[in-house]
Image (tube, rainbow over all chains, first blue to last red; front, side, top):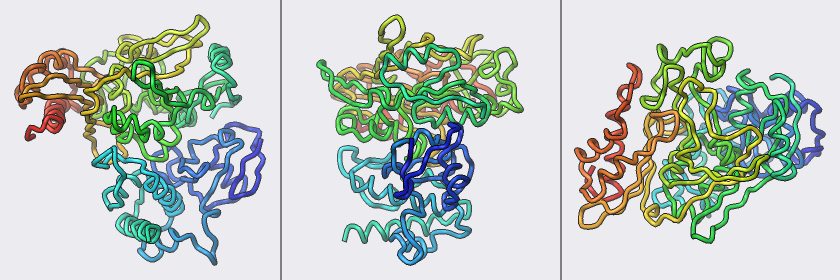
Length: 167
Length: 328
C-alpha cells in the first residue's frame, strides 16, 4: 500500500478517512496544496493523479493506492520554475496567491487535455480539435475560483504557455 | 466522518456480495459520496471501491454503445463515437461540474448522485425528508430556486442534479443491473422513482444490486443533437433549466424529435407528449411552447422557481430552432 508523491514512495495511512489533501499537508507537510472549501467547489486543492487533474479534498488517500501524485512542489523548483509558474508571475496571475498552486496544476493538465483534443462545453465542433482561445481557457479553468479576481492574468499566463508549447 | 473500512471489489460478483451487506456502499470517484460523508449526511460502515470494474466503452452488435459503469465522465465525453453519434451526451457531460470532478466521477456514480438541495446537505441544521424521513422539508418554504416545479411531492421537491442523465433520458438509454438474483435491464426513464412520501428511495435498484453498464441504442437522429444549460453563472453551476434535444427536419417540418429537461423535476423529465405533438409540424415559438405545456401539466411551481415554466418553454424553442436552422 503506497503512493508515489512527486517521485517518492509514501506509505498509505491506516485510517481510510484521511483525504489525499490531508495526507499531503498534515502527513507530509507539502503545504503547497491548499485547503479551500474542502467540498469540491473551489479547486484550490487540485493535484495531478497519474497526470490528470483531480481534487485532493474529495479523494481518499487510499483511493490513490498504487498511483502517482504530482503536487505544485513536484512541478518546479525555486531555481527552476515550471513554465506555467513563470507565466503566472509574468502576467500577474494572482494576488493573494492562495488559489495559485491549484490554478497552476489545473492549467498544466488542461493544456495537455487541449493538445490531446479533449473537447469542452464551448467547443463549437465536437468532432474537431479545440482551439486555444481565451473562451476555451475560461471554460476549462472554471473549476478553479480566484476570489481576488486575477482571472484575466491567469488566462494571459496560460495563453503564453500554450503559445510557447506550440512554437 | 464516522469510521469506515475500505476495500476494492475484485469482480462484479465480489461487488454484489459486498453491496448486499449492511452499511456497505459502493464508491466510484467519491466526488459526491465522500463530500456527503464529510457533511454527516452519509455514514457508511464500509466503502467498496468499484472503479477497477467495467471501465470500457464498446460498440454493440446493434450499432449502439455499451458504457461500463466505471467509465470516467471525462473519458465518456471525449470518446470519438460519443462526440460524433451522440454529441448531446458529450455536451451534457461537459456542462456538468468541473474538469477535475469529471476526471474523477464515474458514469454510474453520476447517475446515482444524490440531491444538491441545500437542506438535504445541511445535516446539522435543516429538516429534510430525504435525509431523515418524516422530519419535514425546509425547501418548500425556503430557498427553492434550484428545486423541482413538477414531479415533486409535499415531502420533497428536490431536482435531480445530473446533466448526463438528461441526455441519457433523451437517448432512451438502458441501465444494466446485476444482483444476487441475476441481471436485468431497466430503461433510464423507468429507473428513477418520484419522491411521493418516500423521497429517500430514489431508484428501482434492489439491495445488493449494482449498475454494470449503460447501453445507448443506435439512434441516427442523435447525430443532430444539442444540450443547453441555463444557470446562474456561465460555468460550474447546477442547472436552473437544461434541455437535451435531437431533431431532424425536412421541408420545414420535424420528422424526428427527442426532448428532455433537467433542473425542473426529481428525475430527468422526458417530454414525450411534446415530441408527439411537434412531429410533422414546423418549429415555432408558439408550437414549441404549446407542446411543452402538455408535459408540464400538473406543474406546481413555488415563488422561488415559478420562472422555470417560461424558461423551459423558451430554452426548448431556442435549442430546437438552433438544431433545425430556424432563427431563434
